[in-house]
Length: 419
Image (cartoon, rainbow, N blue to C red):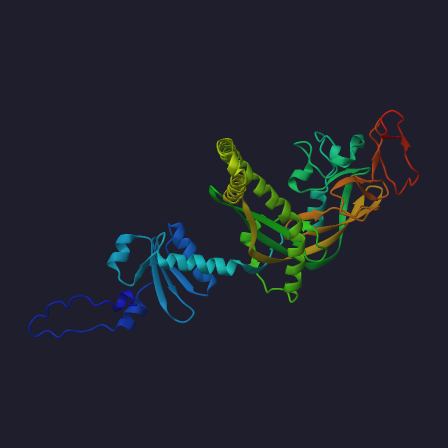
């Protein structure tokens, strides 16, 4: 590799009697002012820059199509996406689709992305602000079925209207008295595991790939919403937890519950797209062998055996195959805070606020202990999920089973609870 001040120029002719004076390259390098770093114009160069920085290299954009990097071992490399520059400069490597250098970057990025540990930057320094924002009462336009209005318990936790807060990941709560303040109790670092699976399906027409992202809380095993990409981009590298193997094993076991339905769905899709062709081939083969039976009644046994073999061959040819491969694992660290909600009449429920994700876990149900994603909070601060809270079918008034343990009156006509 040669720096710009090391390149020899053609010797200028020296006049008779003149003395040629050579300028020291080091002095030239010291006195020369370094050119400002250029903005890379190409996505491939920006990708290469990010990979090199992750490797610990010192990277500089000499021009908008030229990337120069000093590797940790002291080596110097140059990359460009301009073919003319690569041909003119022997020491500059061309980055292009299919080039060995670019494939090396892809492999390195994939290898480092398979197992990472990240720490989320807090979206806010005050967990009470997040809690009060995310626990806002239902909007006037919300139908309220998600919290059990009308006695339709099977709708609990399911978004049923455009204004339902469940669509944006917020708890859907009705409040006897709206929350007015919050008090942070304690903060701690929590870990979660995010898994990315590649679902691969194969049939006669070829291969179909889908990706599934799953996230789980390491302490409770509760399923989380995968982190938004904008938050991942702002995350900082972290050290993997000491019990990472146990955390990964627990998350993988929980992931099986979601993988099996996803694989069944993919298999059904593949079977559906070849079903017509498969049935047509079965009809053709069966019709042909029936004709042979009529024409050769003395060979019925052999023809039946041949039919079974052809049907088995068709089943194999038109069969579908699905599998799930774990593509990457991310251990995510985030700051979590416990916040006590205060209502006008007194203290309300306590919720967990994830400062890194900017989300709130619903309060624990006073009956079953599960997180209340949809339900009611009574005047005494008892949070009850929609499956255990009863709502009068006439006046639509929620009833707290903790404050009123006696069974509700049941309508003789429709069977719904009524006051």
